[in-house]
Length: 175
Image (cartoon, rainbow, N blue to C red; front, top):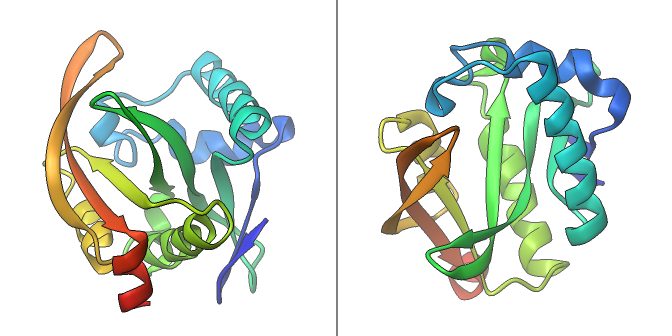
């Protein structure tokens, strides 16, 4: 669906359970979510992505290395409601063994291009837990700047998230 130099980003399918479980069951990967996923939560994750594809045309996508055909994680565009405003957000979750290789930045940059050039978005955001320094650094490498905060209600908790964003004009100037 979306391609970069090293990655193919394709829609998640029902039979991708094991590929997703590798990352979603890893507490080191899911630390910002504050829990590893159960089998039921992974199945619900897949169902939610299929629903996103139907309603929004896109969601989290499976990120596959073109050279090795190995799944490196999930990267995608998510329709979100942030502080009462509907917007496009980029999300990325990478398998631990692929951290630090530039995949998140590369895949997210390809998603930015898709958001601005295909979806005609005015801006794209990342909402990131303040302690998730690696994700904040990805957002900064994309040219995003911190513009605010919001509370996300997840799993019975209120979780502070910082909002990073880039406008279409800023994107066109940088990229």
